[in-house]
Length: 321
Image (cartoon, rainbow, N blue to C red; front, side):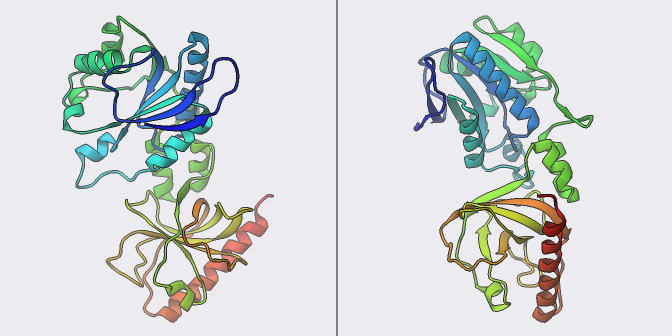
């Protein structure tokens, strides 16, 4: 367990706690919501807000139960869906909302094999002492996804169950799938609307091959452990270096440099020359300039980078302040 400090003032506040795994037995009743919260989009944000309201009314801690890895990653190991959000970023979002407790349950064969009834009895009642639980209308749980909200209500003798209303954005349901699809299309405006903020990737700047510097465009490199939900060349805004910085970023496998390379995020910051190795930065994707392409020579690649930089600057000059 990791205590992160208090975030809500007042006579009824709690320390923010993160539990890696489930406790053997609960220490106090809680108000709980359950989900993967990939992206923490506007639908998730509405759930977290409702959770906080209920916890305040019931005078119990607010809590989130989430899973790592994502269940879809567990069941589709050969071709898992791209994650929208790192676990750390999700935890930071829960903290920013003022959630009192986050339980990160390892999703493995043991958890996946629990029947809906055993999940309710062992996880929700014995280990978490749930007093009130909020789930989405399409919530599924237990072995073979056999449990739904009707099953949950039928076996909820020690707690009450509430179904979260569907949140729509311009008549489309806010969902992780909808965000992922928008990013694949390169529709960053739509992704921003669904998320309630620009899509972003965070990480620590690592040493690279200095290839960008040799081409005249030094980059901040963020290696990626998993495939990203979007690829291409983008106009970006970077946080974590004092005032926000503008730039152009390449996200993908760099086909001209390494045809079989691993995904990497490379960011060229405008009018910035400081050494930032080891700094944790957040890169917001604001506008897609083009897809990745393979060039026959490094000179051709360099010419294209110059064009990308010029187009990104034009975008920022034309964008509303």
